[in-house]
Amino acid sequence: MTTPATMGPAPFDDEQKRYLEGFVSGVNAARIARGAGPLGAIGATKPAGPGVPTGPDAPHLIAQAKVEAAGRKLAAQEIAKRDEHPLDAYLRLKTDARAGKFPKPMDDFRWRFHGLFYVAPAQDSFMCRLKIPNGIVSHWQFRAVADLARRFGGGYTHVTTRANLQIREIPAAAGPDLIEGLYAAGLAPKGSGSDNIRNVTGSATAGIDPRELLDTRPHAIDWHQHVINSRTLMGLPRKFNVAFDGGGPIPVLEDTNDIAFQAVAVKDGFGVEPGIWYRLALGGITGHKDFARDTGVVVRPDEATAVADAIVRVYIDHGDRTDRKKARFKYVLDTFGFDKVLSLTEEKLGRPLLRVPTQAVAPRENHDRFGHVGVHPQAQPGLNWIGVVLPVGKLTCAQMDAIAAIAQELGDGDIRLTVWQNLLISGVADDKLDAALARIAAIGLSHEATSVRAGLVACTGNRGCKFASADTKGHALQIADWLDARVALDQPLNIHVTGCHHSCAQHYIGDIGLISTRVAIDPDGEDTVEGYHILVGGGFGSDAAIAREIYASVPATDCPAQIEALVRAYLVHRAGPPESFHAFTARHDVETLKRLAARASETLPTREAAE
Image (tube, rainbow, N blue to C red):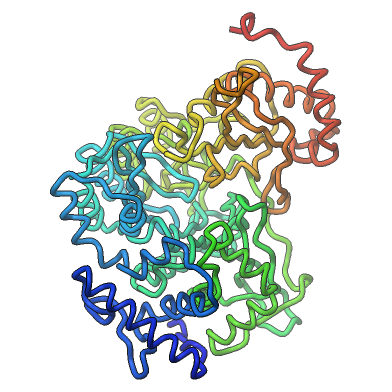
């Protein structure tokens, strides 16, 4: 493992030092007044010399002080982190749990540092989000999660779009028992929510894909271990995402992350050693309509952690701590520009980054949008991975137990979660395939998927998330049922259904994206129903594009037929050989697409007749 360089903060002038002396004195007075220890207590940061903070929290405290020295007001969450670092609040969390108490808003914010989210009013319970680096768990860990979800949760889990698991319907008193059970199983939920670095994603078929350039597992795990053991990397201005793509055909959606490491083959003759490197891309956040952009920098795979650490520390110093809507890393890039951010990164790193021109990098493998479902031969002769389809990511505990047994008895023991809300069972020998497929079918799941269901993604929705305004998972399944019964597609179609502006289902990158809204059904707008704005033309990878809105405020009950009209228009008017839906929508403006869909809808049966 390469140890990241930890550079100290820039020196302060006399005026800033005087401000910091007063700042630390004031913070300590407030802490002592409410019975907390001064800065410098266990796990916190203590002032050294003339009141300048040192220790793991120092970069955050200094950044906050500079904001206030400039006459600006910190966001409430920044004040909460300064008053009591969330990692120091675990004893209070347990005390509240013993009393059966759910947290108030700022403690809800703090508890998320430990993996617990209070999701009222959607559910009067906690949700626990795990951290599973590269999305890979052993069969015994998977079975342990199922056991914990059965004992302390609602008896099911959700696979997320970060190749992760969530447990829901957790009573207040059960939160600590669940957390500590996860640690006992080798799964650390620390930092899985709030202002932290989220679960690191990597190639789902890392180490087994015959077409990959690089096994992402050691680098994703190295980054994960570095993060959970670095207090300074907890409590950022906002959340932060990192992904590793090994160059194989299954999309990782790394270009939607703040940092994207993309495995590439660098050719000879461009000033760096030829071979496999990571290309560095920065600034992906599709909820804010931006993809990670190539920086021209290439990184040796074993130095990825050091480079990522330096970038995050630049973000710590310069991220916006006053406006939560502008606090993501993208806005540091927008303000400073890529060149300055890279220069600041080099200062933190203590050495220059290596750059190569675009022509130095060999073209990458095209994505296989069905690679995460079905049976596929591995790089290891005679072995296969099976992509199991999960209905919008939901698994019962009984299904989890069965999958763990299949992986243990018929596979290599690993279960691989994907960003497409499904899972792979790897290492299944040719002569055990039939038995594995039969056992998958026996628990109500399948390795086969239609063109719609293979790319169907939905967030939790208002059944379990307080931000969502519609039942996204339920509506996504209704859309899939409707389309599968009425149209025959020979090309993959990604439909992403998200419940709020946080865009957890990444509606902006779907061939068809839906974001929920309340739709008025009376002239006064007082009576509303669940509905969606519908978008078209999103993409990722070589087809990266932000979807455009085509229909606003469509009642959820009308969405299946409206989407059917779009799909029928595509099937009638696409170019040959069979043009993808993405390419079809890219060559038409929104008004043309609406006209084509309107014509197609004239031939559709009424809902009553269809049903």
